[in-house]
Length: 125
Image 1 (cartoon, rainbow, N blue to C red):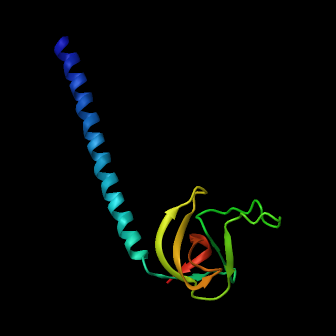
Image 2: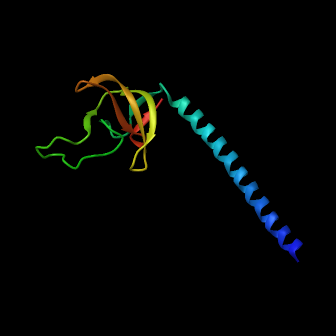
Image 3: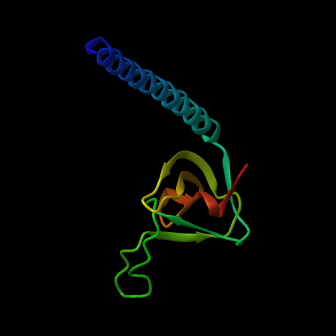
C-alpha cells in the first residue's frame, strides 16, 4: 500500500515538473518571438491612419482629464497632420492595454523631438 501511494505521489510530482519545464520553454520561445517582432519594428516609418491625423503624446496613455480647462497638464503634445509622422524607437504596452510606439518625430513639435502614438491610430511602413 505504501508503495502504491509513493508511486502516485512521485508520478504526480514528475508530471508537475514536466508541465513546469514545458511552460518555461514555451514562455522563453514566446519572449524570443516578441523580441524578434520588436526588432522588426525599430526604425520603421509611422504615418497617421484613416483619421487624417494622429495625436502625439508625451506618455503612453490618453490623459485628457484637464482638456479645455485652464490647467494644461494633459499629455497631448499635438495633433500631427503631416506624413510621415516619425520613426519607431520602441514599443510599450500602456496601462490602457494598447501598445504605444515611442517615435522620433520627423518635425519637432512644440520643442519635442519624441512622443508616443497609439498602435491602432497609425500605419507602420
